[in-house]
Image 1 (cartoon, rainbow, N blue to C red):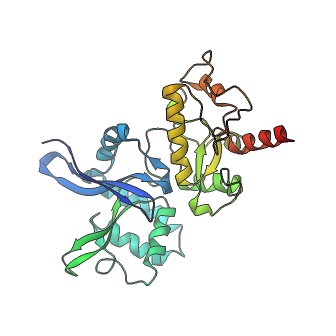
Image 2 (image 1 turned 60 degrees about the horizontal axis):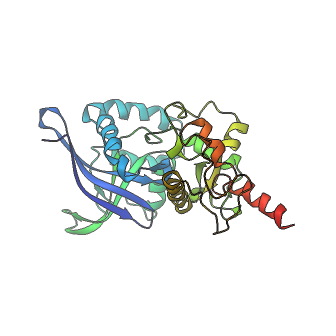
Image 3 (image 1 turned 30 degrees about the vertical axis):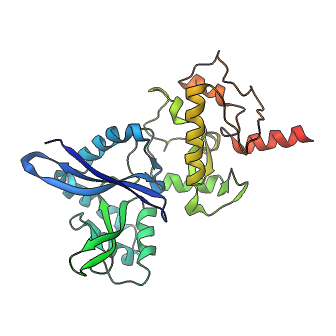
Length: 297
């Protein structure tokens, strides 16, 4: 039997999350049924279709039931620093008991604002999946259920990793400014976006950690976008990579450096490829807007 048995893909529109329901198989015939988010804005997880299998291989290794005791032990120090979060910790304890689906009515602490507690857990960097119509044998009907996936806080990605604390720092450092909308947005709805798109990275471009970057480096490398715009940018950058035709913002064919066509003298992949992105509106939307305003004047 294959070690990973994919069941179905689901999309939770309210939370803008996408999951794959799955069964992981381990030695001694042990199986673990769960639901793995592949679009999960709280940790910046957005796995492309062609990368799902590779990502699930990493998840399979990390969520092995043999690791559960160590995972729980690691959380003790985190929660010891959250003395005022006892209500939220009650939800965490219920979800972490066996990493099974929990009905919000039958298995979690009774709380009229349970959604807020779940949001807090996500803000703390925990990975949860939601099913709004899953059968519960206790209430004998379909109910909203949640499952905690024992990944490290902040999630795992195939690219660069960062802690929830660093993500919050980047959002604050960039003044919660939505680059696409050109206004301050809700920090919960903003994602730090790599200006230089991941599709053009190579092994030397990727950094194992971002924790060491200075404030100036973070400002240089990131802009803030909503999840929707982040996905839109990914599609634009993929098309540019495949066709050599650079994308436009708001449909305006303006480039403050270069033209609509990728400069053939610039490599397509690697750190040097970043120069080919400069001048495109999607690379640095605020800079592009400023340069366009100068042109109009």
